Image 1 (cartoon, rainbow, N blue to C red):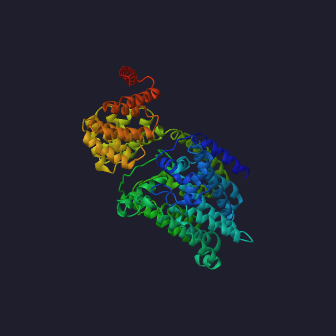
Image 2: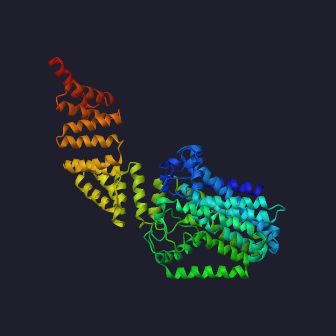
Image 3: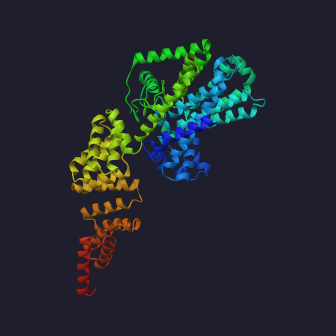
Length: 589
């Protein structure tokens, strides 16, 4: 327990700088645009998250976001804290699983130092910089929770076989497996890996394992129903993975050989770490052959060296759903996929070193864990701002259009409009059909008064995909600035359908009607704008102008006075109030 406590403190030190890091990438939609996490006790909503999110079809993961929301609302620290707690719990389970496994009959000298070996495995795994892709990036909690469920399933089974009354432990294993299935689809192999663990370390054969515990395995297999229900409920997220995702199985498999070898290299030397590899597919036939050889060696080892074979099969079984031939078009490579498989790599390395060097090898792993902790602390500095993580990604993957786009968004949010424009220009150079980048460019150019160039990018944005209400509104503004009021009116009308409660859209509609000489309709929309947003000074002012043009001077004065009250330094409003007061006073009205 003392060793685990010290390990927890070391892990806390490595992640101490990450708790105030911002939401990035999928985090933003899953937290800020996810109404189902606002009340954790409303299980009907929590277990049915909206379509199109990273947690769609993953009800347990969504429930965990609701817990984080209860802790900190939309402030990131509560989400990072839960991620960290999940990581620590998974590390503790890994330590317990390794310790119990090494103490099983037939593993000889390893049992004498099972505690030390288990702490070494858990320490390197917890502190390894590769794990930041899951722990520090909030929405990869799905991966962390899946790993927690996977390890709990194996650990509870291991406790059960050593218990005089195993039913409680095995019920825990089935429950953990079901919860893991509700977190991420990668959990699919867990029931089979428990069976392999039983055959390898307990029963001695698959047949004996089944005959002894067939009811338990039937219950474990039933948890696949939870996974099936989740997959059926994924909604729009299904477009990101599967054979209808726009990438062929063959193309994807050819790229995954190189990806898996890259993951193995990062496990041994985690430099450079990349937040987002993009969607690029690089075929690597020799790498795929090498990975195939490793898979074959793992299968052979299951018979000839069962413990080694178990680790090899675990590695590939966890990676298989995302890193084989089922395309994940939105992320062809991702470091978070190594979160649980890293345990198999570290376990083999630590146990292998112990078999070769004996107890003194554990001091070596202490040093490795310290170096890993420093690396993790350093990597977490890249997550301190959205700008920092995307700048780091662009530096390491300059051909990643998505990284350039998101860096542009971060630069724009921090007020660096010129730099943001350059990133969005690079985005559309790399990916000419990138609708969102064209839209951002168009909005930026329109704000700078370059309406003609802005309109070109709005048109390109529309060709690349469907535009949202805000983008249509901005397009209309650019058209209005270019003197094309009729076309602007069409865009504003479409924006109004998308955003019926937007005061800005109604204000812009009013301006378009003014330009077309349709004063009554202009007044109607300006009135709607101030009704939707009573503190909208510009809308009050323009309503006053429309009323004055219609000869309704007393009503116009009221609106100009409202505008002046809201914007006391507005010279035009000051002038109009003074002029109308003088006129109405002279006219006796």
